[in-house]
Image 1 (cartoon, rainbow, N blue to C red):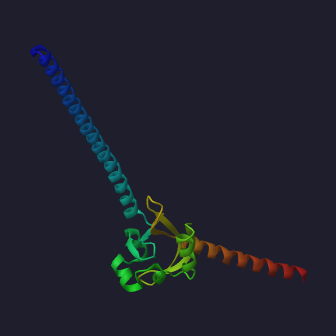
Image 2 (cartoon, one colour):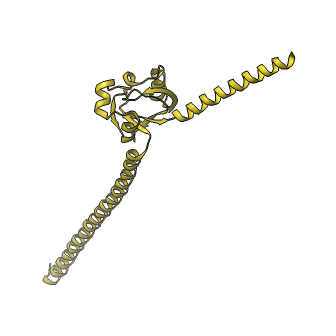
Length: 195
């Protein structure tokens, strides 16, 4: 091999080596850029997730409804401030006085059936119940018992949301009394007219 052929061949090989190094460098830069973009995307997703969590936190704190989060077996893990306002109990007071499982704390006689529908059939359950607050006051609540699933479709939590419907119940009772009174008066007038 002549010196010129060797130089041309060597420079050609060196050129290829430089090309491969440059290509690898670009590939590495592309991978690094992709990773940076993914990280930025994750930060944006995280920021959006944080914003969503902040909104949910505000709702959970500010709502007048009582919210309770339980594990799939009904063990109470968390209650919101609305729960404390409605029932008068903090989380620790509630579980120490009434128990740590919804089966112990529920005033509803059909709680087992409702839990079964929720946990085994995957259906939200709605019901009304008369509950007793910490100070002994009886209040009517409308309860929504809902299954919450993780991304894999596995039951992760149960949630209850209680709304105080005492006024509505009282108004309904007053209306029934008024109807009974009117009905009684109509019957009495009807009997008097027949005489």
